[in-house]
Length: 273
Image (cartoon, rainbow, N blue to C red; front, side):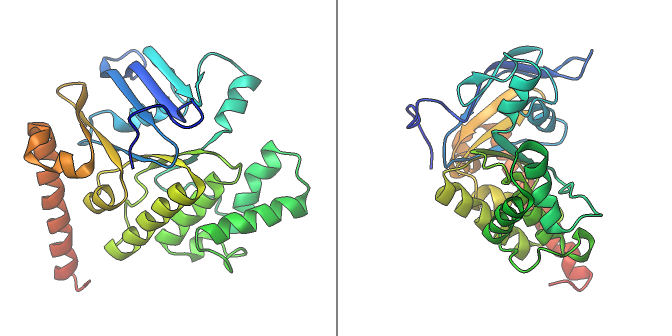
């Protein structure tokens, strides 16, 4: 899925214009970045290590202020307001960190209830009912009272997505969701993301370098390059993987294939098939 015109409601879930991001006091990592995500679309942010995509993600969720440019969520400038108004805007999106960032001393149900108790006035029973629904959406019905440490990595990632969905956002940011997962678990997580995007009309912005996730889950991708300090190519994964997208894209996808092959060989050598 991709959009070329205006979204149905006239406001993109995410729109970035002329953005420059940098470490505080340091040189620019990315310059003049422009991108947007539409309802129901999965946008991939790709690039080699050190190209700035994780730093860009921190800017997109409001953890860092950009050196230049505009980040708009649902048509509203993220940095136009301060304090309570910015907090209200931030509640319109969810975030899943690479490690899941679940509270280890809470059950899955309590983890998902936490943002509901923190940011809404829902009574506890209503918050728990909403949390159970979110856990069911990600395939974790029956695990409400499990501790994160007792679950597999894939289940913890699903629980983190359930918590990110707690406040009914229409935009989710995912940081390397498939990192550390085996191919079968990763494929199942990719399918979950696609299902949520389509069924709930959610926009996803996903930082990833996993070739399988890129080719099966991502609708449109933006490839960043360290030397260019900006966007090297943009389009569908099939286009970026072709020779038409330019040398940076060719190098990235060639290395991704080699990395996946190396991982498969390593698993075979260690008896994991």
